[in-house]
Length: 67
Image (cartoon, rainbow, N blue to C red):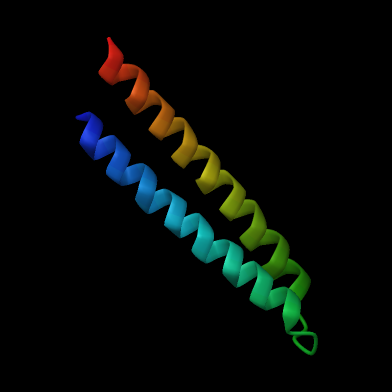
């Protein structure tokens, strides 16, 4: 996979993580909804995993370009 492709995928993963973080935050703010705790924790976990994958993929693309 080319480094430009890896960087593009890492940006997409990062913005998807931001979207899930916003979904988790919105679920946390909605106090009358019964399943807000499950939505909040699940969204934050998915956001953390996607952000971690994005950072790893971006760092891997940087290391690949140098060699």
